[in-house]
Image 1 (tube, rainbow, N blue to C red):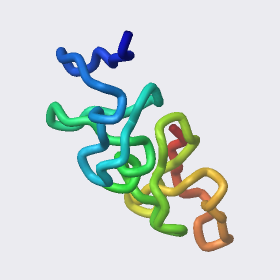
Image 2 (cartoon, rainbow, N blue to C red):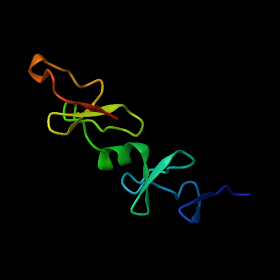
Image 3 (cartoon, one colour):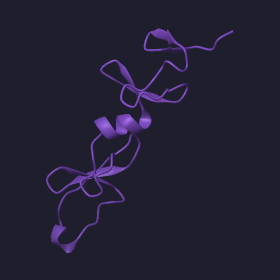
Image 4 (cartoon, helix red, strand yellow):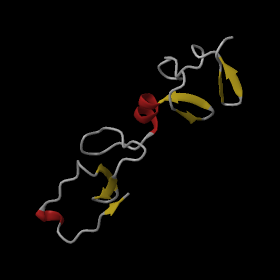
Length: 93
């Protein structure tokens, strides 16, 4: 009996259910859907998530982050406060 993946309202061979961007099989791993198309975690984070203004890396689902300096996004670990920012308002997500 062949294995199959039920995803996006269809049945797929595991080797045929691939990331839209890199074309690697997603298999039974977690994946994201954008515009009805599957993406592996790495590509979805690279292509569609907000980027940290300090390290330029994606702010992944579940990561702590904040907006500062006029609403710019930072990873919580990347943000470094300085005395110039004393008494400014920051929002942690």
